[in-house]
Image (tube, rainbow, N blue to C red; front, side, top):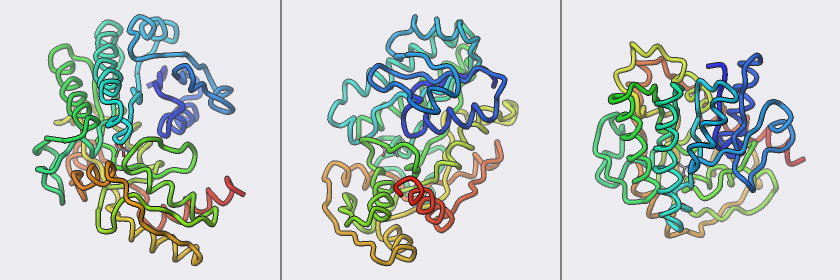
Length: 317
Ligand code: AKB
């Protein structure tokens, strides 16, 4: 990886991934791809090349790939799970038709493609605990439907055309640089912002509903390591389960209260997010990622909470 296009570079993952890749590959072109209305600012804008890229425009993408001799594309364009329930057709257009455009250009130009999948690719019939790598994927949300489709399309283009597609199934991501928007797991980020600001947090997910979560530095490491992995060791490709912690709102309340004793939380359930959360795994089995490309997370609940609170105290003053 040297010349990389990050599509969706101003989002929760993209903003941090672009910065990380720029620090790892200072001699390369790490292009921050964005759509109109979500232009990069500050360090993201000044730290390297930026280009407007809409996944629904294959020829625009091909021109950017040529201009920067792109060898790897991180395709992070997506509507998250709760938002995709409001705009299901737009979610399909961006996530599925958009990916087909990218894969078609990848066939022609020869670049590798990372398109994240998610715990959202599973559904209520999937084993909830130690969810196997290869198991039932019958999601009920449009987000999940698009994630299963993107896993299948990515494998199809690898098997049929040799496009180097790889990906991971991200848990809910906890981070302090860019807020997520429209996801079911957003609460696990928002709870920290509320606690550090001294606000009472209204939790949309019921106590006792567990989901896999991960701290952003581990997610970035996974996204980079999978694309650098030795292809001869990969039995799977799209997508690998990766896991680091399984949390419910009460676990987060406790870990935050231990650090911010005045923290207060009450429940104001969101029926859309509640239904989605209840259909997702509690804890994925990530042994294939560990065996095939050496995946190992660095953060657990306590070290993540220490780091999040320290970073937000600086950010929010
Ligand atoms: C969401 O909640 O929609 C995402 C995800 C788990 O894929 N954060």
